[in-house]
Length: 120
Image (spheres, rainbow, N blue to C red):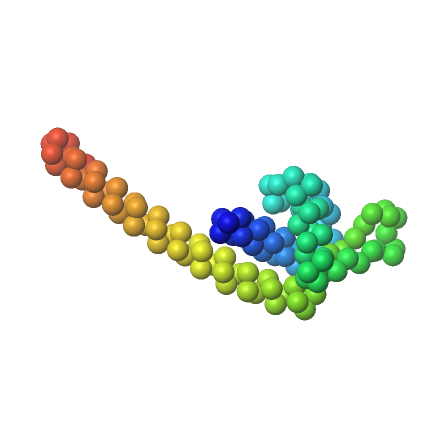
């Protein structure tokens, strides 16, 4: 369950971040940037719209009828800030765990090298 929550938060964070930088990004380009399916991107956008974090604005001057801008609402900006903090904390925790694992493996390798006489 926690993993699912983190995955959802991660994709919401990435969507909000991408759209804040480029509100005119279409769903296909967004899906490509996220590395997920178009359907998952659409589902995520609908969830963010339903939560009031995004609003859609149609380009009136556009010749393409499907040209939209996804704009972050004040609630979306606030939630993006909270998601950024949680994302950063998770990444820092992952980094600390990875660093500890690397140090452990380096010590293990060094001790194996001493036993076999193949120190590097």
